[in-house]
Image: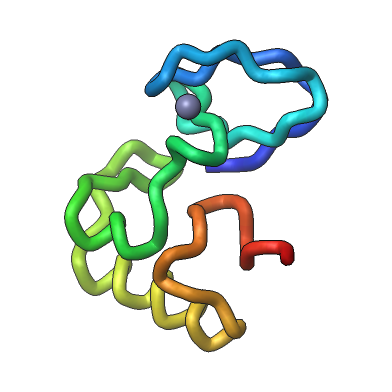
Length: 86
Ligand SMILES: [Zn+2]
């Protein structure tokens, strides 16, 4: 999952056409706008896949979440977007 900026994309969840400057998350088959992208907390309730297409195990998910929290992040932060800018 990576964030790409500067390419026009249609969100795969809300089907909204995003502006060219709007960041989005590339989840493989489609893009998600920031408001539709999952949070770290969502990793515990949804299935996520690694770069090889294998489902992440609960232990791996908890490691990702723990690393994010250790960096000062929050469970409600959007995946791929880093801590909320305020
Ligand atoms: Zn969306």
